[in-house]
Each structure stands twice: as structure tokens, then as C-alpha cells.
Image 1 (cartoon, helix red, strand yellow):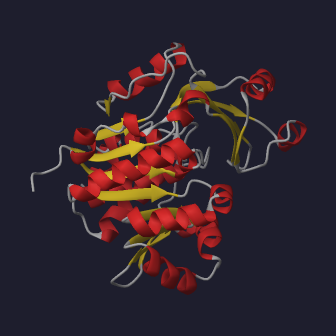
Image 2 (cartoon, rainbow, N blue to C red; image 1 turned 60 degrees about the horizontal axis):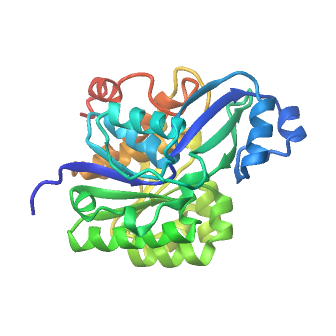
Image 3 (cartoon, rainbow, N blue to C red; image 1 turned 180 degrees about the horizontal axis):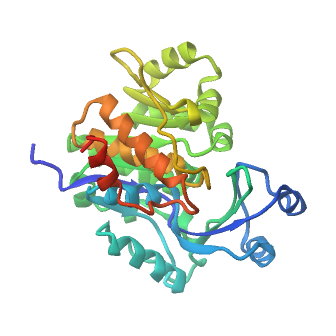
Length: 332
């Protein structure tokens, strides 16, 4: 089999992130659940945006953040995601392409605007997200380029987008192409509320299509019905060939179907400024390592390194070269 031209291709929501600092009173007054993500309509998005403190606007979306981190590690990434033919859509496309990401999804004409995620970050570094999906939720099977999927070692799916029925069909098409090409498929659960809303559909999709499952401890508990690591490991092995569970300052665990649990320590951040994108960065490091055929420990340590950099500053994408940081740690 020829060496893949892309390390990881992400399929996810093409979102512009708006990040600002907030306090708990702001969250309460705007009915925003702390630490989670809810979907909102365009009218409510405008109201929350108007009430937010001054902040920054950058291209985001969970899978797109991961692909940006893959690029920062020196890898070659691709992305499938839908934007509208508007100003925010052009900003999103330019940002990814400027990083060298292979992004060619056709923009949406005549539909909703480009999606945006309003992220209010409290002093404890928790991010509370309200998302207007807009065009982002309209990824369809027609947006899946078979040649692009075949060129990627790993195709990585975002759980947030899984909730959209037409996008789910796109996921299944991409998985079929990946498997026929001898490639792997990965999925991040994204949020415990996604798991609860789509429990049966998630389990069916994972069992039938996914080679690498990523979740934090709350999401894993929701999927496997337990907080006990041994119980989670037993159930994870029955469902998926490899499961990664992140546990914040406790690090992460990698659960291969055949083999012992691999424990990965968290790397201390220079500062804990903003947890936005920590899971996305971890996924990037892990998947980049696996795409390059690194062992589980080395791949997991790349994930920890990427996450530690991202949480040390405001925003969900690296401020420093992850490749340089990884080379200093002898991980690359």
C-alpha cells in the first residue's frame, strides 16, 4: 500500500470561534450551561454576541482545531466542512489553507450563514459554548471526496457533527471509503450531552465503523455507564479496537483491544488560561503519532504535549510550534 499523503483528515463543523472572558453571573443571566455546549438559533446568537465582552474571533470547530494542531506538529492535514459563501466563510477557508491544510469543500450557496461558536471563558478556565451551526451542519455525502479520504492515514470525525442526520450519512460514506482503502477511522465523542442524545446511534456507529475512539472521562462514563476505569476498559475493548480517555490533570489512558492499558501523564502547562481546544489538541497529537506508526506511549505523549500548549493561552489553536516543542521533548 502506498504511503498516505495526508496524516489525518478531519470531518467536522466549520465554525468561527468568538472567545471572550466572562463570569458565572453572565452565564446565568444568559442561560448558558457552564462547561458545556448547546446549539442556538441565529437570533439568540446575535443577542449573546452583543452582550459578550470584547474578545477575539478565529476560525475554529473541534475537528478543524485538531487539524490545525496536526499542521503545527509538521504533519499534513485535510479537512471536510461546510461554510457559506460569505465573509466569515472566506476567513475560515483562508485560515486553514494558510496552514497548508487540504481543504476544498464547496461553500454553500443560498442557505444559512457560516456557523459561529460563542465561547465564554470563566476565571477557572472553563469554556461555556453556545453554537449557531448555520452552514456547518449541512455537510452531506456529496461533500466527501473519495480521493481525499483514500489519501489520509486516518479520517477523524467530530461527534458534534454526528448529530446532524445528513452529516451522519457523510460519515458512513467516508468510513466505507477509508476501510476499502485500508485506512483507519477515528471519532471524538465531543460532549457528554451528545452521547446522551445519540446514545444508541453512537454505539452502533462506533461498533460498525470506528477504529480509534476519543473521549474525556465524563463522555466515557456516559457512553459506558460507569466511572470505574476497569469497567470502562472492559466495555471499551468490546466496542472499539483502541479507546483514548482523557482525564484532565490526571493525564489519559489508552485502551487497546488486545493489550494492557497505557497510562499517559499530563504535562504541566506554563499557565492554565483557557481549556478551549484541549481535547482537540490531544486528539491531534495522538492521531498524528498513530498515523506515523508511533507506539501508543509516544503518540499519547504527543497528545499531552499539544494539550498543555493550548491550555496555556487564550484560544484553541497553538501559539507556539508544536513540532519545535515535541523535538525538545524527543518525541519527534
